[in-house]
Figure 1: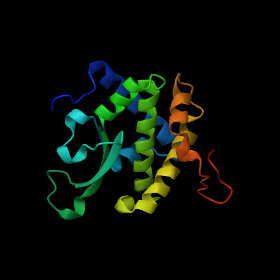
Figure 2: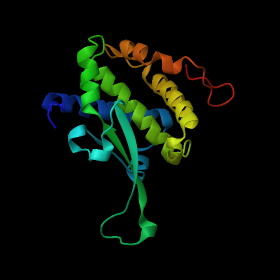
Figure 3: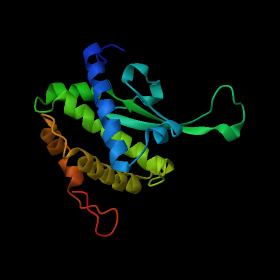
Figure 4: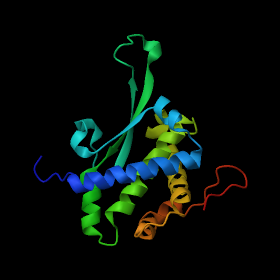
Length: 185
C-alpha cells in the first residue's frame, strides 16, 4: 500500500515498552494476576501484521474478538475467546506528526492502556463484546473506558501525558460513576 505508514524499528521498541507498562498498570488497577491474563488471552499487533478487516480508518486502535482453540485439541468445548488489540500505525503516526504537542510515548501508553481496559472489562464481564455495535452502549462504554484510563494513568509521571489527557478531555466531560459513591476522576 503506497503511502501507508508503519512503525519503524525504533517506534516498535517504544510500542513494546508501552505495552509492558500498560499491562502492569491495568493488572494492578483491576487486581489481575499474570495467570489471569494468560488464561484469558489477548494479543497486540501493529498495522503491518493486521488482516485487511482489522485495519480501520479513524480510530487509533480497536479490539477484535476471535474464538480460538489449541491446535492439538479438536473439541469445540476447548475453545476460548482471543482478543486482538489492533494498533493503527498510520492514524497514530499521522496525529503525532500533525500535533507536535502529542508525543509518541505517552500517546502509545494511553492508547494501549485504553484498549487493555476494554479487554479487562470484557474478561470480567463488565461489558459484553457483542454490544460493541450498539451505538448508545458503545458511546457510554467509551466514556467509562476513558474515565478508567485516566484513573489508571493520572498518577503516572511521563513527560507529555498531560497533553494526551487534554486531547481526550472531552471524553471525560460527562460525569461517570461506576458504582454509587465511586467516581474515578
